[in-house]
Length: 304
Image 1 (cartoon, helix red, strand yellow):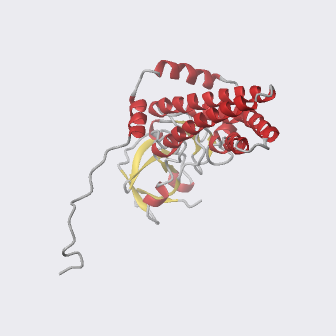
Image 2 (tube, helix red, strand yellow):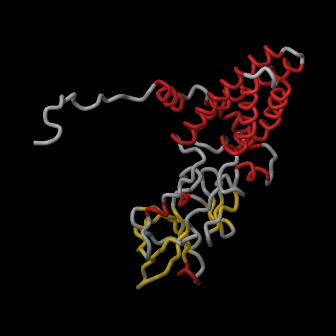
Image 3 (cartoon, helix red, strand yellow):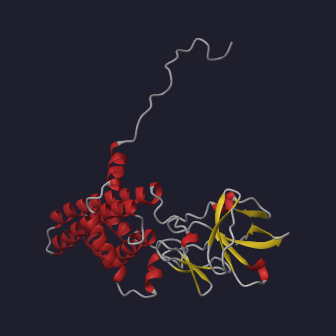
């Protein structure tokens, strides 16, 4: 006899599918209707003469994307303005905060567009909706600021609340993009948990000329192996095989000046230590120590 004997059995819980918001995002990611617009915007963003500032906008010095950090400034200002708008005594402060949000929205938007231009197509489709909602919010706040400056505080508050709703919608879409679709995440981070400590043979390793990347495996983890001049490390450089930026196949990349260039978005990793020399990757690529044992290549994940 169990303690549950005699209790009514209602059966297993009902199986529920995704909600309407998730279904809408999935349909949006699969729809090709806006691909022509996406191509035009992407090419324009990539042609911007940003130079070294492009890596800064990606967040490479931080080790993670800069856009989520920068958006805290306008969102914080506008949310504070909304709270002051609920009080009869915060007109001047609310107007100042609305203006501060508009002033700081620009850098956040530029960083977002630079990141967006290097995403995969389904991510770009959802990202375009994220941008559209945020642009709507910025326009609402611009009208709100004008109304406040003209002394029409009631209309200014109304436009401000409309802007906050649009920005909130954009934030929800951005959360889906970041956490559901892994835009901006370090795709190579799980390697450190998947490779056990110690030395392991590199499997599935064909013979190829020096300087040409090739695929291999360390256990279940794909790696890229680059034969180099004989010397330390048994004459091989071994890095995690999928790019930390968007999971690009590094074995299909090109070796240039001691670095490996991802074939998808051009992230450049130093063979010696996996350091991300240029973006859009914001994190280094996991790298392995190597040795030859009885003519067989072995690799050990290098700790940071």
